[in-house]
Amino acid sequence: MVLNYIWIAFFLIAFAIGVVRLVFMGDTEVFPAMMDSTFSSSKTAFEISLGLTGVLSLWLGIMKIGEKGGVVDALSRLLSPVFVRLFPDIPKGHPATGSIFMNIAANMLGLDNAATPLGLRAMEQLQSLNKKKDTATNPMIMFLVLNTSGLTIIPVSILVYRAQMGAAQPTDVFIPILLATFFSTLAGIVATSIYQRINLLNRTLLLTLGGMCLAVAAVIWGFGRMDKDTMNTVSTSVANIMLMAIIVGFILAGVRRKVNVYDAFIEGAKEGFTTAVRIIPYLVAILVGIGVFRASGAMDMIVDGIRAAVEACGGDGEFVGALPTALMKPLSGSGARGMMVDAMATYGADSFVGRLSCIFQGSTDTTFYILAVYFGSVGIRYTRHAVACGLLADLAGVIAAIAVCYLFF
Image 1 (tube, helix red, strand yellow):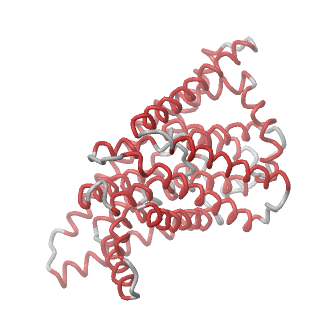
Image 2 (cartoon, helix red, strand yellow):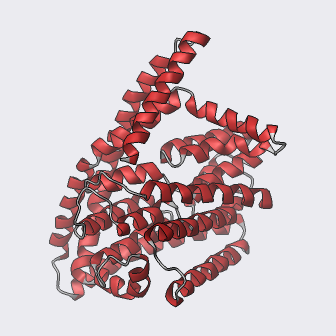
């Protein structure tokens, strides 16, 4: 329901701004630009779905091998003490636990192509527990918020973009991104737990969150002692080695249980193809709405208004130049990536705005895109508090990114 109102608002606001620009400013290009955006955005949505087909087929095939090989069940049992508290409505040892873990691990390593099919698989398993098939359950919402908060340990793609844009030290945003995304995820967990009345003040969760804090500190310390070339090599190598190890490990587990791994892979791959086709309408809807909103100039007006308000209050408005990336990120990953590159091209990769745009890009994830794709894949229409909690996590990430950037740069 919330997505319905947001989608309508995109078009109404865009149309109103277009009329104002045409009547009062004589801008005859605004409506052609908006219409061009509808066609290009729908084409982009289809291309994204088409590109996901192969990846979905691959990873859902691998996950099917893992399920039949017992790996997912083993992960479910291992994580059960923590997940029964964060996801109290998921039965102990349910396969969804292992899928959720695999999705979160892929996100942490910056492996977006691997994370999406794993996440879609987890949503299908959570939907099997859902008594109201068109309404999001508490576990679904907690899982979505963990995704939208964008916890990333190795932001490989951002480091690559910075190198391509001529940054003297492409990895100088690594630690700031790690800190900002950690606070975003923590805020998302707390907000969702408050909504769902989950008690976080218990020994298991406190030890887990404390262990996460120590792990983050260890990663920061370890990578902080490396030069930029070593950091890039190690981060990329670790991500790829772990990904390949997962594939080989699942296959070996299947062989150990005497599973026909080839047939199991084909069975899962067929599900991947079906899922990719099913999400096309949802992607078209959300990306067209975002595209029209951007083409109308609404995003520029919001940024200019924020800059004027900050400066009127006597604040430093330097960070506002990077806000388009932060404002676009919940709506569109590719749009935010374009904003990030544009900020580095306009202000310089090593400028405050250039660095902050990169931290924004890495501190949160595409909330509305994830909600549209994940919920759309299982036919969820009523999202309950998912949007509110996801946006609170995004807000925490944005505030943390600004604070961390001022602290470091």
